[in-house]
Length: 338
Ligand code: FUB
View 1 (tube, rainbow, N blue to C red):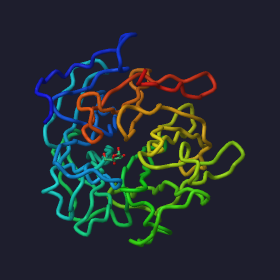
View 2 (view 1 turned 90 degrees about the horizontal axis):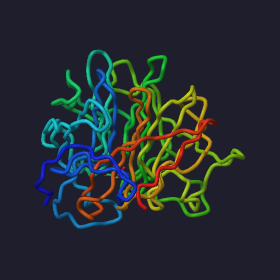
View 3 (view 1 turned 180 degrees about the vertical axis):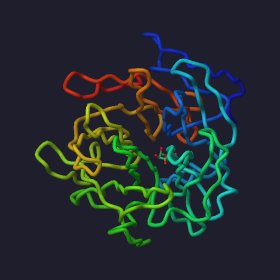
View 4 (view 1 turned 90 degrees about the vertical axis):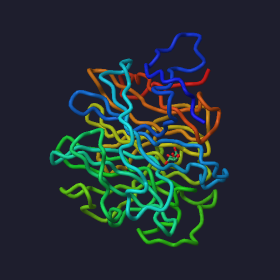
């Protein structure tokens, strides 16, 4: 059961703290934080972890989430508001089970909530729901986004006003079942010597509810231009895409899953290729590692999660810490565990 105290203040870290920062909220379990600044306020779109008793397995069936709560704060360190249920699985006509990591965007005077959920045949797709306010409640479309699949959408707005969705996740996220955008329920994970499965991107249409183009793979390459193999599992993509721009460069960051890193890679186009640069967030306590990055009032922040409150890998808590760059544009690695 979730802890009962309702402290909602961010506590800043001290040198002898076990953790860099403290949970943003403690009255519910939250994870996979996608943060955005809307109207000068920080909104965090997290997963809402719950203890449903579903047995644990490699497909992540124990991550059996039913709804979303959106959190907001004026600034990092300020009071955090939980806006209550923003969207429930029962109100998504096509949903079967497992509401995983969401993201949000603002366009056309509307807020869009993007979410992965399994359909009634147990296949992940990405859906969209709309609201006139950033905290919802959101109303889901009747069908998933056409051509969408797998998990962990990240919607990025480029300086020219174009929006792109990055997505995908292997293992329980089912990306291994999609080759050339076609579904094969029997398709297997790659073998160690094979090239690693790549994350996906598609430009969004002006209505923000459909893809404007066929889904493409994006390349993550090493400094010599080579793609990673499955055996390079401390570098290859697993899940948790995030895109941000810094000094005109595109920073694609992602989780390596079974090696628990958040890595980053830099490119000159939203479509990549992205050259691997290093470790952004070292493994946190808990199996999953999932993050987002925003700029607010001239500072950069990393939102992430760990399992400080519960000690259980599927009952996570969202945190935030400052992110710092070096003069050459590289990112200083965050270590949340001592
Ligand atoms: O929260 C469920 C899944 O765990 C997310 O979709 C993944 O990114 C991982 O954090």
